[in-house]
Amino acid sequence: MKSTITMKDFLGDGQGRRFADVANDPHVQWDKWVAWLNNRPRQECLEMAEVHFDMPALAGILRELEAEPFVRDYFDRRTPQATLRTKQALGVLVKLHMERRGWSTTGTKGPLGRRDPLYSGRGDHNGPRSFSRYWQSAERYKR
Image 1 (tube, helix red, strand yellow):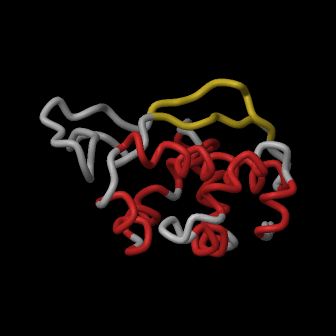
Image 2: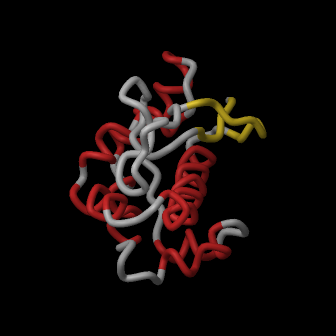
């Protein structure tokens, strides 16, 4: 089952509306993020991360997402502090898809990365053994 989230759905959600600044920031290109996740195989990867790998749903798509030029360009030009709201907005977008697919949040987060002690201030801020280049943790879900 594929779920489709529109910008209207995102901004109409109780949590999503708090990220109107992200959705309207031309540097973020939020419409690309929303369209990118409106893809059945990616949504299935969200579920596979939870079911088969006991990882946060976001782990199922991070490698592919972080390889996207619009995502990489955004993160490579900003500090982790400047990207925090975009990361949180993505968490809300994932939540909307997971809920439409029959999942609910657990209220706990699972690890995705470990801070690199030699971090220079921009770009990748997690160590080379981390699962994600930019995320430290993400929400866990249950059926």
